[in-house]
Length: 397
Image (cartoon, rainbow, N blue to C red; front, side):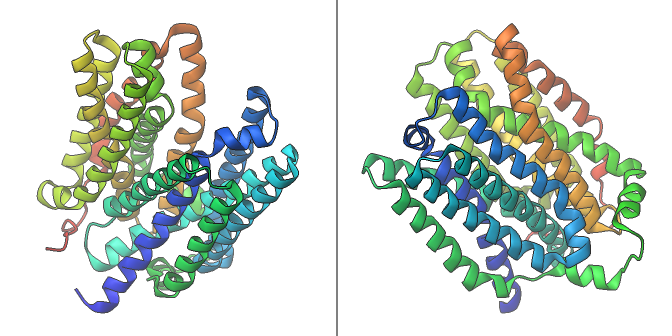
């Protein structure tokens, strides 16, 4: 591997680490944020909704913005919005202003959504450019970022460090990493766009890609696998406590284990895909997630429920990044295809878990996992759309 390719990889992985790191850093301080804002649980839920609104706007607008202004500018704008959102949140906490906190989280979410789309497009293009599997590792760095951010947040909370000092440190680290790594980004997607210029409007490009049956099938896969991951992120601790009788501490440990398993699975994913192929691993991921979810729903034995979490995590870890990779590799207009696939995935992340909560409120969390199981089973039959048209990508030795 040449030194320039190595620098480009480091830059791409470092920038993917940042949104996960920043997101989990403020998530760990939500109890203190709520108390500082003097918000009830209901009002705080509305404040947090600002993040979801901003994320959806960033995700839905990013493709059109990239088509108009280019991926570099949109990436830089995304990171600037993330930093401004953090700064505004710090000011909102100083003033105990709930409306300002809502706006801050909306800006933060918008930046995060834009960054996620940009880095998924860039990762898929760079993967094809160097003919190596990197998407699973790329998402592994996002998971690693969430793990490191959460641990730092827990440490800051335990040491009673000021939340504004905590946020100042996060902003400084983000700015420093961005300054050091942004210029080393490969921007392979920009090169592809120049070589395959499309003079049609962005809307026309989207409509054309939506007519592709393979992309539609991959959309089903990414919806299912993102829903499997998102439902665990939001509901796993409560599911293990309420439905399987574990203690509060054990329920939290299951979530930590699930997150750690996701991280390990994604870092190992490139080597696994290299040996067995993307389609085979996607099928295995769907089977593993389906078996895990089935056990979670049906079993009343605690050790089987614990095993189910492991299987669920293994299946969820590779589904999202591999489907994003497949979307980019199975057509010419890679940027639009990856954007559409990522939008579907993030819609499942943001909309699916609250909908499952509504079902859980009326029928129990076990039953709430049934739609997820059905989607994952359906995804298994759609994974053939991920088959490579040319020689499979290689993972570096």
